[in-house]
Length: 450
Image (tube, rainbow, N blue to C red; front, side):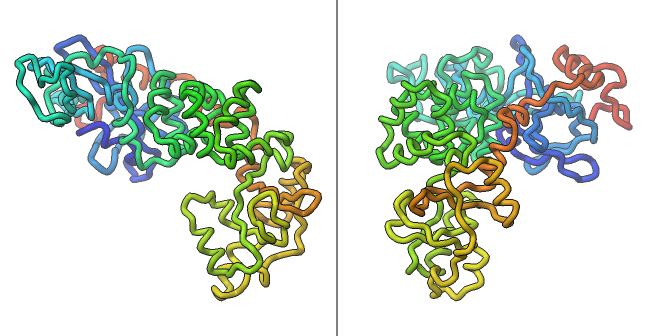
């Protein structure tokens, strides 16, 4: 079973209920010639809580699911010094092929169950790296550049050595289909070194999405590792409100340097947002709502909210403004909810169906006032206008929740308090590290370990 294929697959109890998804595999690296022993799985259970599932409690693993015996300790997973995360730390590591002396990159790791029902890392999938002197090996034989193949564990060396500048392409590939909040949780759990390497390997758009979901300390740390030019590029990909929140955590000199490197049209809305108090409507709003002119049709408005990149809360309402429609210059006329758009014939003008009775809010209104407005009228977003009636932006319900929750709510979700350890789990984990099984701790009905 190749470990990278386990990333993200569902984990079920014996009754068939899904309790979470596998995120990584915990292994113990041992002195040669003994192969690494698989200790268990890191499983993410709602909401973004990582727990440890001992491999001795896993009863079945296939390409689509992991099934365990129903016993799992919900204590937050804490990696020990003697443990290694196979996906998070071993993928992309540079090793040496013993037979030829060539360098190779680890693409995946294959684990096998032995006759004693232990799981060991027995195979390594690698990609050859071209030899610096242009030859393919110590024998001077040329080989195909980038050739990939699977070899036995004992045919490579150097996997236990921590690499100074390790890649992250294969780690990212393992989590390619993961949503940004889930990937942010994975990144948060990595070491600072691996976080920086993952950030360097992600494209700007994907990194921006992940940064928006990370705690502020992680955001500042990663941004500082990028270099100012790339940091400015990533900030341009973030939503203006999220970029403003992140820049607000930086010293004034560094903040101004990054704003100066951003494209003027991208920096302008961020600068405006930075002028508002954090818990005001202006400080919470985004400057990129869906805006149409009065002569736009229902069909045109629906086409705009079909954009897959739109936040669902932003796509729920369309704002009608006189040209020019870009914030903050357009004069606000009214709002059309997407449900109304769905009920009207496509050729209908939005100006004929927009709601003009609900008054917009000013940017100085408090967080409580915005929350009350949304709750009173059962809305998911509210328009924000200046004294002249020009649309400045919109505050969505997710922005309000973000500010109503404690400042450290992301850390609280990702780093909940550590509970007391389960004695049986601890015994199993220690025993696996020491190559023994505690008597009766992992026995199944037929006397074998699951």
